Structure formats: structure tokens, C-alpha cells
Image 1 (tube, helix red, strand yellow):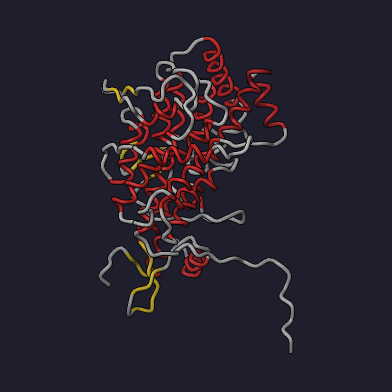
Image 2: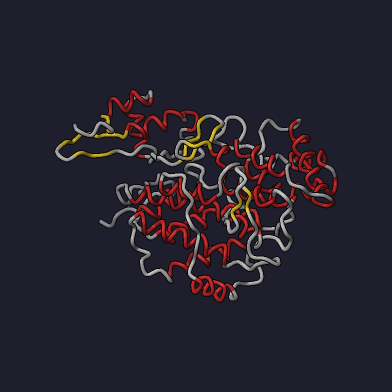
Length: 417
């Protein structure tokens, strides 16, 4: 066989360290994809997919759920390190703008993309947003922006990479720029590690829509670093939703819309809100008491632990270091002190380490951003990854995520004679 990326069933089972019946059980449960070759009745498997699954043996399917492995060239989680196309994400977060991370994920080159949207589309989103109800969250505005932007793009179904990148860069700009400006200016400058300043960076524009106050020194840098780190994270639930949608050959707007739906759950993109609740409780009654009360009922501590890291989430320290570097005083300084108290109180009670949701919550709470800023930051940042995964999926066989169920209901009624 000419395609050396594919191996037969016997070799696939050897790579996974299982017997062939187990291999085919993985196939039936959607964990491993089986390929066919014209003129060959055998089953073939992608070596890279098998090796990736083999790296995560401890995460194979259990009675509580399934673990799906998908080959990707975008993001690697190796031990407690996170890489975007081979670049250490933690290092990128401290040195480049989010625009460059998006460019890396979309093109493979660490070159910034330009986030610009037609004024008419931004205006249309703002008009549509007037119809949102009194209980609308920022995530609702962002979802609305996706729908409206799609309806204004006559080339939305063009899935050529260049067209998808054009649509995605315009979409991200629309999502941010259509949000109401809360302060006196609509963008704050982003200073980079090399001494340069980006005057119209996406992070600076987003800050102006999440706070009525000018950022403290280091504020836009902290927000930008957080966005860089949240740009992608392997096959998270929302990313899987984007890939499933893309496998039907839907347009990138719809793929992002599917991802936003998955992100809006309390166990994913809105998880940082629970951490803010914990921090508020710690400020009111003390960190030790707040942590103890959370754990007393058998609850997990919000913002702690992550299934893909054996140790510490590498994104957390970068975000917390950026929060620690903020030039703040008064209420903000007092809040930052509480964050440290919660970390120390938890260290003696739980084995798990704080994750990126904790860092995101610390940033939004200390900086005094609007209450639902965390999920908005997460959503805007993750569009880069969702679109990159959708672009990869457009190059795969369509509809490859068709799963099967195991029926557990009542037996079917007898057939009529």
C-alpha cells in the first residue's frame, strides 16, 4: 500500500497494546477511525491517530463516558506543557499579540492577522442587539453577532482557506466591535515585550467593552496574554462541536455558532463565574472558611483540576503572574490579596492545582471587569482555535463523526403476525 500513514489492524493493535477485538471495540465506539482503501477489503488506521491515543492511555473510555482522539497539527499537550504548532504557548503569551497567535493557528506562520469588520455589519449587530432581553449575557450578544455577520457575508459557503480566514478575521472583529463601549475610548494600547506598542490590538478594544475604567498598568498585557493562552486547547468540548459541525461542510460562522452553544454551559466557558463566586465568599468570610464550605458538601473546588494535565495547568501561572504584575491599589489590591489567600487555603485541602478558569476569574475580578467578562474573553479568544479546527476538518472525509448508541430502553413491541 502506497500510503505509509496507514497501518493494518494487526499493527494498529500492536501500537495500542491491545488485542484486535479491543481495537474494533474502539472503532465501534468512535475512539478510533477505520479507513478503507480501494481494492482492499481490509481495515486501515492512521498511525498518528493511534500514537496520539496511545499517549493518553489513562484517558481511554470508561463507564462514565467516551474519549475521542482526532489527529491535528494545531495543538499539543505534552505533560504539563502546551504548544501551538510547536511553539510554547506560555512563551507566546508574554511576547506577541493575540493577532499573531490567531495567525499561527490559521496559517502556520507567526504573523499577525488584521481584525477588521465592515461598519455596516457592526451596525447591523448593534441594531439586532436591541432586541435582546433584560437577562441577556455577553455570550448572547456574541452568538447574535455570529448569526448577523453570517447573513451579511455572500461568500460564507466558500471553504477555501483564504476565504475562511477572511471570514474569521471579520467575524472576530464584529464580535468585539459590536459590543457597547463602556469607557471614554474604544481601544487601549498594548505594549509588547520588545518595547513596541500595538495601538489597536484586539485586547485593547475588548477591554474598552468590559470595563468603564481605563486599565491599570499591565492590564491590557494581562488580557492579551490570557487570550493567547485560551486561543486553543486541543479537543475541548466546544472545539469538538465546531469540528462536528464542520464535518457536515457547514460554513465557519455556523461552526463557531455550534462551539458557542457548547461553551455557554457552566462546566465549560462559564466556569470562571463560579470561581468569582468563591472569591467573593472568601472576601466576605475569609478564604479558609470559603474553601471549607465548598468542600464540606463534597463539591469540587471551582477553578481547580484539569483532566488533561497530570500536574499543573501551564496557563495558570502565566495568567496569575500577569495579575500579580498589575499596578493596582485600593479595592483592586485588596481583591488580589484575596486571590492569594484562596490559593494558599486550597493548597492544604485539595490535591488538585488551580487551572486557567481560576486565572481568568482572578483577572476579571481583580481588574473589576463586568460580571460576565470571563465567558466573553474565553469565547472571543477561542474563536481562533475553533476556526483552525474547522479548517482542518474541511480537509477530512465529511460526516466522519457519525456515532452509534447502545440502546437501553424497553424492548421493542412484537411484530404483527
